[in-house]
Length: 216
Image (tube, rainbow, N blue to C red):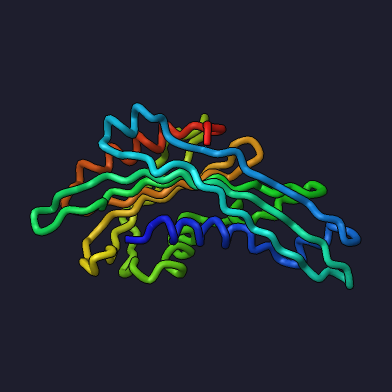
């Protein structure tokens, strides 16, 4: 499952700002925003059997045409990804994936221009699905509140089918949540095979242990 590519697409799509919102800009000025990296506690991840691939930065650099002017917005997002090798009997691969995305709110003249702020969990999972063809048959299972970064965050659980790099299809659960912390939105996504139902506790604990800012 090319999860990192899907999450990179999510971070990119988060900054597809509309020209209407950019009406607060004047002239050809440029605005630069960068999120602070976010990650889960290293000990919590290790105890759950997850290893990090480190934190990557994805920059969005866009020029818009607003009333004859061409303001530029540069936004840097961060993604920290963790993977866990899981043996399902018929094959073994890194089937457990946990990722934390930090994306700047992009506050300009009292307006938050990053549309992620208004996205529901259903819209977030839809965004991932639209960017990653290997995730299909997504259906909501339930939702619950979890304390993340001092906020009550709604975590939604979905069932889905995921196709991994070796073209094997696996029934998975996907957990999605989002909170705002300081000047960034923090999106977290966890994926694991359905037959390992106990993995849910690990994912939720890693969400509870998110740190922001963290050392990239």
